[in-house]
Image 1 (cartoon, rainbow, N blue to C red):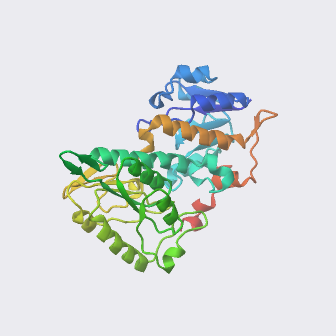
Image 2: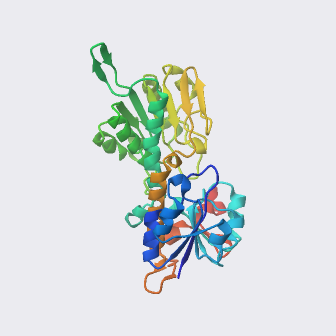
Length: 380
């Protein structure tokens, strides 16, 4: 029987790596799921609810981890946590693989098989395992809700006997999963929405959601997407032209949501101090790239700052602020991922090391960092 351990996250992480739904499905696969008491409380998954679906609730993290085959986490676990696992046990989490390398090396040295869910390949087969998409979707929604709450005016146009309230103007910068959800949410709330991205494929997506696309559409723009679907770093010349276009557009916006991130790199700078100073007093910027330095020059990660009457919010874990949904989706991502590693007949852990999903996500094995993106040449 495969034993899966789930422990509580740190004080700043309300999500959890399992849900009542996935406990039931893991149990049906023949797994034993051991959950540290209270681990799901901040996601409104009570011990009793998890227990009724088949989980074994244990008093401490050490009890959950002892001789477990698999550890499921939201954030990177500590070396202390993984030392109680079986030799060669699987650890699946959002490891922040480009952050704090010494800690990652220490985890690798424990001989567990470390899988980083952020490295999930962008292939059809892995869509149900894509944690970046599931969490970004919620972050895009919450960014608009938070912006609307900070914006001291109404979002939709309202016709009243006392006159018309104009619709708020919302500008979404970066049209990935978070950006698309931000567009859809802002539209549902009645805003007049525009959006920009350097990837040409996004123009149609923006239009399909009823928003207007804003970008410098030259030859470089037509080639600005990687095979994996990410934006390529753009030339200085293109960045200058795009910045000029954005500068003229942003001064009239009420709400700006920035979502531009390139894995393993500092966040691209999209909004300068001068652009902020050109905006109207009362405008709001929500910077979803705050954890990588921010898309706005004035962003302070984890804080709301006000500059010339413009409020700039740099949230660090927006998905975590909707923990019930975020944990439910993340837990399903992990269930789909582990489903390819559990032998349904023999009820044992059986990892196919040649599977492209396994090869794409494995960070460390046999005491060494093995992922190509984390080797010296990959990091250069």
